[in-house]
Amino acid sequence: MNKPEKTKKVYLVGAGPGNTFLITVRAQNLLKQADVIIYDYLANDILLELTSPAAEKIYAGKHCGKHTMEQDAINNLMLEKVRQGKQVVRLKGGDPFVFGRGGEEAEFLHDNGIPYEIVPGVTSATAALAYAGIPLTQRGLASTAAIITGHENPFKEDSGINWSALAQLSGTLVFFMGVRRLPDIVNRLLQHGKAKDTPAALIRLGTTPRQQTVTGTLENITERVKEAQIAPPALIVVGEVVKMRKKLKWYEFLPLFGKSILITRSAHQAAQLSEELSILGAEVIHLPTIEIRPPESFTELDECLQRGNEFDWVLFTSVNGVRVFAERMKELDLDIRHFNKAKFAGIGSASRKAIRSLGVRVDFVPEKFSSDGFIKEFQERYPDLHDKKVLFPASNISLSVIPEKLRELGAEVDLVTAYETAAPEHSPDEITKIFDKHEVNLVTFTSSSTVENFFALFPEHDLQNIKRKLNAASIGPMTSKTLRNHGIKPLIEAEVHTIPGLIEAIAAYYKSKE
Image (cartoon, rainbow, N blue to C red; front, side, top):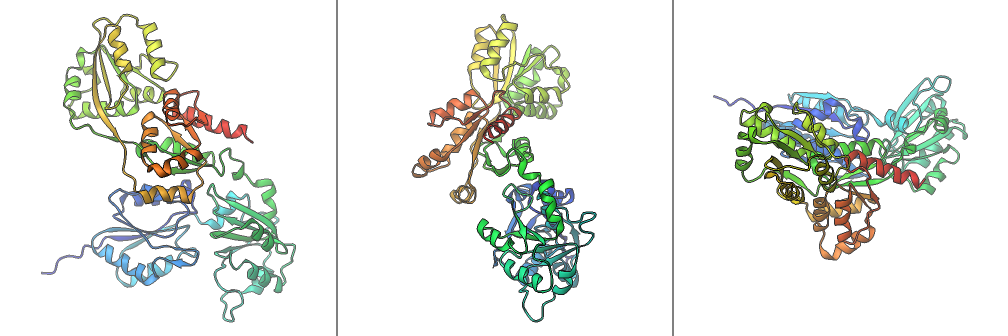
C-alpha cells in the first residue's frame, strides 16, 4: 500500500516595502508558523525575527543584479520542502504579483499539483510614494497611473513597453528596478514627447529610516541622482504628483528619522522599545546581550509559594519576576488568595502594571524607580519591619542591597531565584555584519548586565575601536555607573528610569540637536 504524501502548502507571501509596520497580519502569522522560509532580498531583516527559532531560513534573493539562486532552483526547492511535509513560506519583498515573479511560481506549483496561497503585500508603488509625500493619484493632477519595469533595456527592438503611450499618459509613471537605466528611461520618454519640465523623483529604500528622495524634472533628475550617489533599490516616479512632496512630505520630519539605534535588551522584552523607536523614525537593530532562562530548579521558589499565607510582603523588581511568579502559581494550582495577608511592592511602572495583572492592588512603588529610591522611600513609610516576612523572587544576579537593607530593618527575607539571566551566543560574523552594514548612532543599555555582556562580545583588539565610536543611552544611574567603569560616558541618561523614560530622553536629545 502506498504511503500518503506528506505535502502541506506553499504560501507566496508579500513582505511589504521594508517598514516592519507595513507587513500584513496574515503574513506575520504565517511567518510564525512556517517550517521553512525561502526569502528574497529584504529591505528589513527584522522581519525574519518574526519566525520560529526552529524554522529553516534559506536566502534565495537577488541584489544589485547578483543571483543567489536561479529561478528553476527556487522552484525545485519549494517542491522539495513542501513534499517533505513542511509548511513553506516563499517570502518576497513588496507584493508577489508586482514584479515579484509570484505568478510564475504559482503557475509552477499549480502544474505540479501543490496547494498554494497568495498573500498580497503592500507594494512600494503606493507605500514608498506615500512615505515620500507623493500621492500616486491626485484629483486635478493624475487620474491614471502605470507601474513599469525599469529593468528592461528601453532601446531593445522587441521591447514590451509602449514608450509612446507612456509619454502621452497624463498620469503617474512608477518604474521599478530602474536606477541604473535612469538616463535611458528619461531619454526614451523625452524622445516620445514627454515634456522636459515634467516633475520626477527617485525614492531609495522607501518607507525605511534610510529612505532618500531626490526630486527634479526629466531635464535634470539624472544629474541630481548622480550627485546624490543613489544606489538600488529605488523607484522612479514621473508626473505632476511629484510637486506635492513640498507640501506633503512627513516621514523625514520624525524626530529619530535616519538614526540607527541598537537595542541590547533581551529579545522577548525588546518589543516596546523597538516599536516606539521605530514609530519615531529610527532604524532599530537588534543585538540582545541578555536572555532570560529558567533556573536549574524551581524547588526553592515553589516551596515559598506553597507557604504564601506566611508572607507579609511580596517584592518584585522586574516584570520577569512577576511573570514567573504567576506561571509557578498556576503550575502549583494556587491562586493569589493563598497570599491572603501579603502586601505587594514593585519598582517602576512596568512592574506595577504586571502586579496589577495578577488581580491585586500594588501597595508600594517608589517615586524614584531605582534600588536606592526604593530603600529610602520604603524605609520612610515602613520604618519597622520587625518579624515581617518578605518574599523576593528575583534573578540569579539580582543586587543584594535591597534584601540586606530590609533585613537591617528587622524583616525576614526569602531571596529566591525565579529566573536566570545569561549572555546569548552571537557569532563573530553576526556582530561584524551589524557594524559593517549599519552606521550605529546609538546603543541603548537597560541594565548593568546588558553593558557587561555587550563589551564581552568583542575581542580585545576590536574593543577599543568600538568604545571610541560608541554613543550610549542608559536607563538610569546604575547602568550609567557600569558604563563609566568601562570608560564610557553615557550620551543620554533617562531621568525616569523606565523604557518610556529612556525613549523620551532619546527623542529629547536628538530634538535638542536640530
